[in-house]
Length: 432
Ligand code: DLL
Image 1: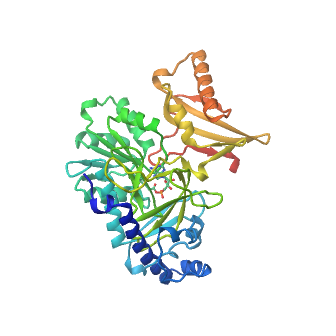
Image 2 (image 1 turned 30 degrees about the horizontal axis):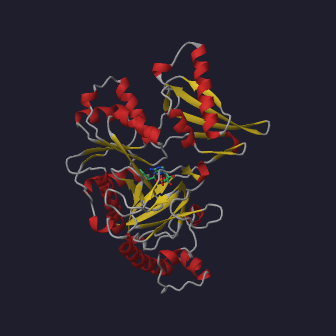
Image 3 (image 1 turned 180 degrees about the vertical axis):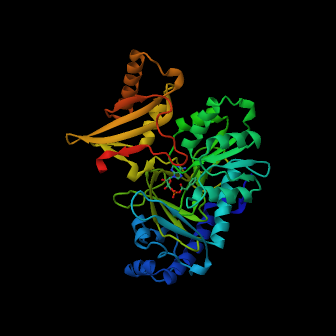
């Protein structure tokens, strides 16, 4: 099943035509309505009547998170406040949050892209979907909510946390779908085991997991813990929220809804646009958004794009699972490390759990990395010797994959703090 066959399966030529038309209209709107963009476009002698296609888009300036902060809260809005029907915000780690606005049509478009996403996972009227992403300023809860209603599923708007209640409703309502972060899914899976809930009382068949990087190894873990098929959903508040891209049943990348969001991948240092297949920073231009359109927004997310046609019939490009954000990349004594690479190594081993944390510090002017790993209950031993062996094994696996010496600290089951939303994988004490 495909939600909107006309747009999701159109030929690349037709798509380019749609994109160019929408892009030209959007740039004209933004030129006349957003002083920030008018100034930027005037600086490059751009005429509002110029036709813009995907090629000429490359000459336009980038937008960054700093631009959003500088124009806090509503400076980048392209419509009068009276047309704004919703505001969301993402809490930055420092300073002001990033504010995004939506018109009524933006909410409709958002619901449609999430409906397309859920349809990719085979979700429809018969399903009961437990939305365990946070409701509120975060876009996860309400984003999934509207899309799920649009496909006609029954929504359980439980929001994040309250694990006992999650499990009770999952059993009593016979929920067939759970939508939450992958780290919370792993936690729910463990809770089912701990509470001794019989497998036949859990009716989940699909999980809609996103909002943070996660690996194929993590997918295998949550699929087996929860007895479902796990799908990756990607998005960011600035662009719309969840539903910028989504994995189909072929599971070979996430289709980006290109009739609304035009992706590019650039070299983050030189800003040069990279060809399909190369790893770089993902950049989006929104072509249909009314309240807060963005030109070439730098996401900081690192991935590759693939354009070859997918077996599902959709023609939209696919992005690989995100390696992480460029600002999450740790540089430890000159070695680049992403938390997701550590996750892959840990979860390939049966003795460890999906709960881990990276502690970075500086001792005597040298960076140090400590990886705290929770050991699986079954393998946790009172024997010093066993634990020492396990520690050495992890150390050597990390060393051979990442070429980095890390200090491994094994911790008892259930000691690393659980997150109900995005997990905090890194504590960087160098930044004090
Ligand atoms: O996390 C929107 C969302 C909600 C997506 C629910 C999926 C599901 P923000 O809070 O603005 O929005 O954070 C956006 O989260 O730039 C990525 O770094 C990361 N991210 C989101 N989805 C994925 C994913 C929501 N599937 C930031 N894989 C993005 C990896 C993801 N990282």
